[in-house]
Image (cartoon, rainbow over all chains, first blue to last red):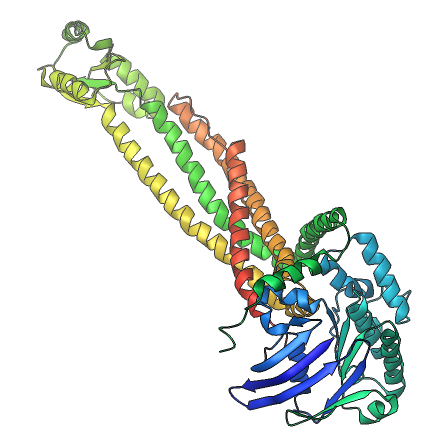
Length: 218
Length: 334
């Protein structure tokens, strides 16, 4: 599903942030990406999201080499992934429904299809009935679940989560993780960047550990 | 090195993108969705303007004044042109006779002029007639009554034949009359018509220049408004980019905002100018009545109204589009 082949990322100011990183995520796999801050976790996520390009090596997503994707094609590649953020990144001025519907609106789905899929996604994360609320009227855990519904609403094969439980207490974190495992059952590949060691250890999933830009465990 | 060799498999990737684009249902569904997206952007951007009435009024006010200045000046020039257009035909020659020439001599002189084949009509205005006319129109009635002697000369008005439009022939005819011993002073209207026409053509050039500058103002103001709007909605743009929005999708609502700003400013400018013309109308028509002329103030025609609205809208849209083209590309998620 997602393959890193000898990926190196160098910034002119700071030098190599990633050095010869290689790994392969198989379809339907949940993988944690961990390491100290500055180890290169967020760089890996940025490379996958095409917010940055790698200096050397190749990233292959769903059979497509990311180095061959030009700026105009970036949005279409991004539609194959769902992003989940630590700070949720919801539009505060829009309702829960509109937030979740955004990827579908962007892809040009029809009105009925959007309505149907948004309800299905909200149902999955347990927020059905809160479509008309605004994000600020929800708890942190609920806001994160809106973010998750938005990430999965267009059924992307890959989910990228950046510290998804960073702002949540252990109980809510466990709930969120349970959601990811449900998606795993329908074949979604999930990459979760986290430094919540206790959570990672409890979950018994594959772990990629970064240290100073190099992969030390996979 | 990687940069140069960035898209070696472009064609293959393109096919892939097309597949991704197709993914959202049948063609008709997508067409309807596309139409809905545009309609939604059209009305939500209008709603956005109403949601911030103060900011919108300020922007549209500034734009409307710029457009009103340009189009108002244009309308003044159009009216001036209409005025000179009516005067073009009147190449009348006025001969002011010497003071010592008697009425009978004047009549004989007029008869001699009538024999000239280039002349269509000759009219003698006696001293008394001239005095009466002057009294009526000048409003100095009482002052004139107190004069001991009528200071006005006898005037012979000569209207050359219509066919005589050639300026040289007209001038030679004029020179001919001027040389006559009875004539003290001769005047041909052609000169001030020509002068007026020169003034109008200068005014027209000034109007074009002013309109160009003000059009640029509209362009820049609209662009800057959109720039601020993008800045205010930065978060939204970045989130949309992260979930796979194309630049075109992101630009659409902003472009419609630019459309509305331009259109509404055009409408406001039309009202400003029309309102001012209505105020001017009674006084101008009163003035033209004094000159016994058939002058009616021209307002915007349908075509001019359409042009005004189309131009202001187009300028604002182009201004917005250029800013969007640069800014949306630059906004990147981090």
